Structure formats: C-alpha cells, structure tokens
Image (tube, rainbow, N blue to C red; front, side):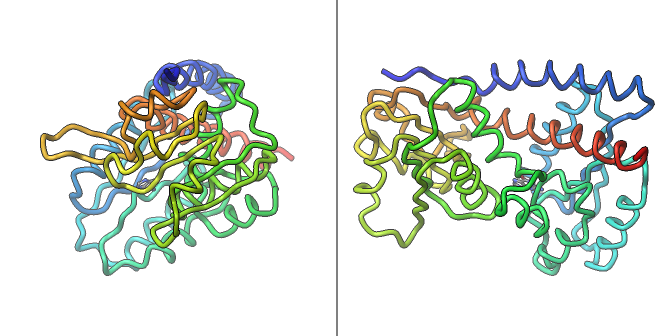
Length: 286
Ligand code: GUN
C-alpha cells in the first residue's frame, strides 16, 4: 500500500519559506509582483487564475490581474505584454493558456521578457533548461521534482517513464529528471506496447489528460507514481490519469488528484516570481 504524497502539505511548507524570502525582499525595498493576463471566459482558466491570485496574497506577492475579452487582437495583446515588460514594478508575467484561436500562442510567449518569464515557456528559458543553465523552469515539472526530492526518493540511475510530450509538462519534466541522472523514457499516444514500458518505471509520471487511463496493471511494484491529470467527470468531480484505487496497491508513493501536483504547480509559480524579483534586483544594483 503506497504512501499518499500530499502536495498540499509540501506546498504549505514551501510557501512558508517563500514568505520569509518575500519579507527579506521587502526589507530591501522590493515588492515582488506578478501580472497575470487572462483572455476570454474559459471557466477552467478563470478558476486556475483565481487560485494563483489567492496563493500570491498568501505569501505577500502583489498580483495584478488583467482580463480582456477574446475580441482582443494579437497586436493589442503583444502591446499589453510590452507594457508589462517595461514596467519596473512587475517582476513576473504570465499569460494564461490556452489563447483564442486567432492569437498565435508562440508569438505571445516569445514577446514576454525572458527576465520575467515565470512560466518558463520562452524559447530562451527552454534552451537554457536543455543546456543545463540556471533558468526559469516550468512550474508543474519543477513541482513534481520537488515532491519526489522531499520524500528523499533516490532519482539518480532510476528509470523515469513520462506519459505525455507537451511543452508544459512532458518535455520539460523529462529534461529535469535527466539532469538528476535518471534514465528517461517519454511515451505518447503513438507509443507501442505502453504497458511494457511503464512496468519498467521506478518513477511514473502520467500527464495525458485521460481519466483513469493508467491502472495498477501498468505499475511496477514499489514505483513512485505521479498523477498530473486534471480531468473533470460528468458528476463535476476532478480526477487524475491514474486509477488511484488499483495503483495505490502497487506503488510505494502516489500523488492524489486533487491535492497532489496542483498545489505544487502554483507554489513554483510563486517561487519563480520571487526568483524574478531577486534576479531583476541583483541586475539593477550590479
Ligand atoms: N494553462 C494550463 N497550465 C498553464 C500554465 O502552467 N501556465 C499558463 N500560462 N497557462 C496554463
């Protein structure tokens, strides 16, 4: 029977550490600030953004919310980002995804200053991660790594299997674990014999977006199982990509949904904002 890893608890401890850092910055006259730009009325996006704002308040980060209707043009959005790039009181900028179809997501991501790229999605941040340089690491992958590390689960030499190859989770989390000296396999929708591969995983990360796709029969005895899925069932409840009841019998550690990876993701956004405030401050005085 696996130990259930409470992301909520780990996140709460981490946020206490961030609170102290924010206070130190404030003593130096810096008020860490995050601007979130939200386009349109996607209910899931609105709910995520609300969670981000609440978390900012909790640790003393200033959160600016800019909401625009989905009639905004790409050019107007790019101008809005320029304004935030040039505003010295703003340390981090996040444009909530997905964006309306008439707006080119990559163009928007590239417009955010790499100094303020708290999502870690800018190609410069991605390239720095790939080449092992200090950078903003995307929040969900960073949260996952932190969860595993805080359980003192050995990563070096282990086989990490990632299901999903998105730019937000699958690709960056694979890089992060590679840097921790794991052997990493990335699986996706065209992977043949998925179960044969997942059964080799010492650490299994599911980021597919299909409710209960991975049951206990995919899991090696004693594996660390991380569920990144956030799927809404017909009855309105949230559930992961992992079939929890059968997986919990095989794993040694497992993250629940909700209360696992989610709270860690938001916490890493706070951490990246504090990092941005520290970095911009250091650049200014050096
Ligand atoms: N939409 C879903 N996840 C994310 C995220 O991590 N960052 C942004 N900007 N949008 C998202």
